[in-house]
Image (cartoon, rainbow, N blue to C red; front, side, top):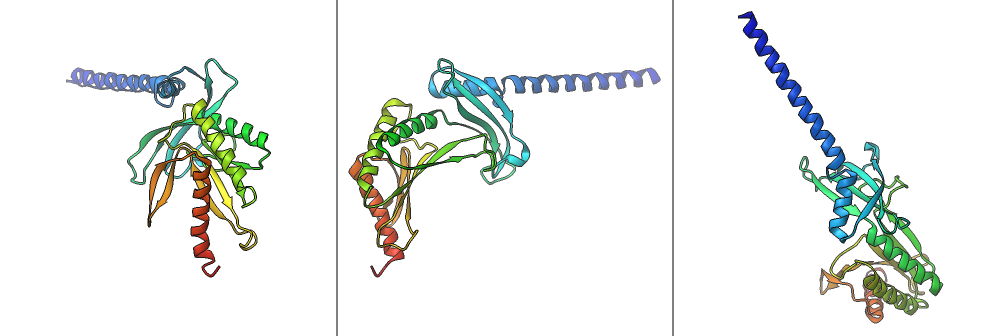
Length: 255
């Protein structure tokens, strides 16, 4: 009877060791080949863009740097295999859509956004237009300066430079669509923040008009609807003026 008890105990110990070994092997597989691994991110990028990428570095984000509703995240620096000098950020993260504890796996990268920014900076510099670039950090918090998930280009617009800005935006966006994987109907993490101000408005007062590339939210009657961005300079000009007029009717109803 004692012998039988020892056999059962040894059998349970063997089963436990097998379970622990399998768990360790699964964890090693997850780290090496899973969705948050270098292999997994390179695979995601290849499937998305149809070309090979190299993961230059990878880092697990500390818990105190995670953004809103993000459970865990790993960031990457990647580059096309044939152009290692063109590096960009990518991330793989688990986040909730607001219904804890349900978590979803998300992927993000700035491969296209970096190309768009290069085109814009080249065109804006040639035109002599002033602007400022802000960087998105999600799925990390805003304090993580070493990571970027998108761009916001901030431009001050007045009646004096309105035509120049619209012509530049139009030409640059046409180049972006022609020279990058960006497509109409897709919305990217690249936004133009156009701060328009009329001379008659109060000092430092302006209306912020956002232009999301390349699918934007427009007013339609009394509601909003998503539409592809019209890259015609006159369409951009009219969009800015319509938004400014709507703002002025609320802020300066007697003017």
